[in-house]
Image 1: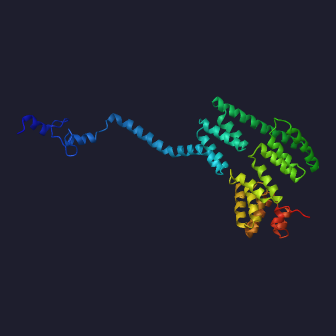
Image 2: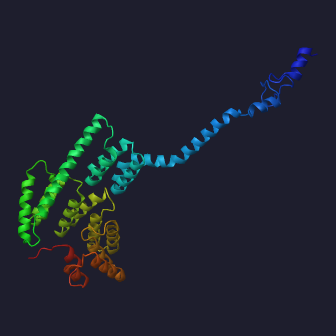
Image 3: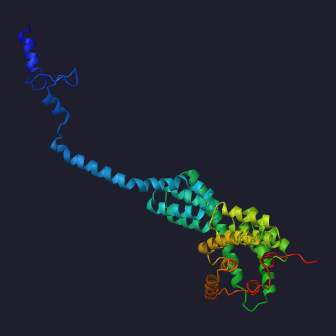
Length: 356
């Protein structure tokens, strides 16, 4: 038989209330009755803690609301170079600019924006970003040195552009074009010897006043040696190669641009022409449309889009493009009219065939 102590432990063994037996139905080692165990599980929050808990909940909710934007911003920052290599240069720089505007104190992001802009030849974007996001900011010695270097490069670029503009402003509208080109060339030759001048710009404009197709190509190649990311110069080289009949060389030039920027107007125009020359008229139209939607004012983009529309028998759209060209003060040229009237072929229009 149980003694009184054992009977007491059996009936009043709960170590919390000492008024009920221990409930071992869920835990054989339990030392609490059912009521005390339930009370322990559902332990009430002290009233003094309620404001603190509410503040924590609000802050947590706010953090979750902001988290998607923060994660997106970080992803843009972390994957910028990969996005450029996937052919989205302009969109990437634009996205970095938007993120930088939301996080003006995040200097690492602004530095990346400036660095990528410089590496890919977007000098206006680099200058804007440097002035907007880094002016007056504290930087490490290494980063500061890099930014000073970029500033010196930009100074050379803008000084060169200003010097060229000064030369052009000095020309009389009534001057003979050949005389104008000769004087401009003399200035370029002198500037070429000045190490303070931005050499890729000098070589590009020397190409524009060259006296032969071979000299033109040589100047563009020298330009690209100085600045491989000069998309305009590379597109011009591709066009020159295409006119010489080197369609594969032209394609390589255009594709090198599209590797970094899929929507670049001049490169898409170039590929559009190559597609049409190959007989792929629909493919040519697709590329011509990308060029037009990207930058209709780029050199001969409307013209090429008009030709692509015409070759694909989209007469109504072609007529609308003719009207747009008139309104944009870029009327149809005589050789384009000859193509549209059937007087010359696409090959004759886009390739300068050698004659015996």
